Length: 277
Image 1 (cartoon, rainbow, N blue to C red):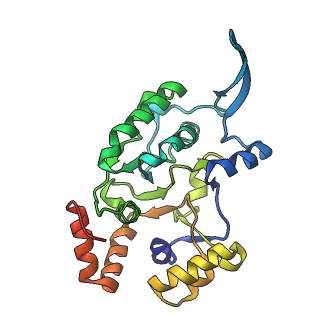
Image 2 (cartoon, rainbow, N blue to C red):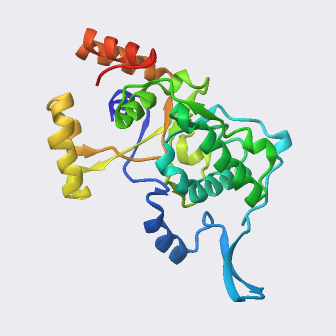
């Protein structure tokens, strides 16, 4: 939310939510009904000695690009996760990786940031998915699993801090936040992220149209963090937007101005290996 407020003067406004849904369950029904291409699995019959079963077979519905000669973009996905979300990778990873194959030059790397103890499990999971789906090996290298740089003893706060320090994990010029349980409804394109001038879109909607949950979040949580303002009339929780790199340092300066020594002490201790929330 902080990033949205600080970026509002430098991005194009988009009054609709983009192409992501989460969790996976609600996605499947609408995706199958629409016949969209991101759910690139088709049900086929398989005969076994035990009987007649069904399985899902991966089948890309696009002309795959030449990854060997791809001109990489400078936009990375930032995916902050933990071991409790491992099962969702079976759905999100194929969706995102196929988009990377079908739309070259849109996404560079998918940064999977997890607690240090979870790194081996995530690497094993990704390796298993690559083996099952037969994705190109060079794309696996573009899914680095990186140990979190912060530790505060509270997983939720660790995720918040990591997302506010995304620029410390990569030299990307833009970062796109995706959750572990997010599946692309269609391939991600540059036109969905940026306008013709290269400015990233800002997605928001009227909080009253969003419903009770959005109004409650803005009035009972955001207002106490940021105070009164026009922003409370809108809701900004939309995945799949590209945040410029320079915003992160600007954001941290703004927070220091509001919270001062308290914030500086908390973040410096967290990055040094532990702090009390």
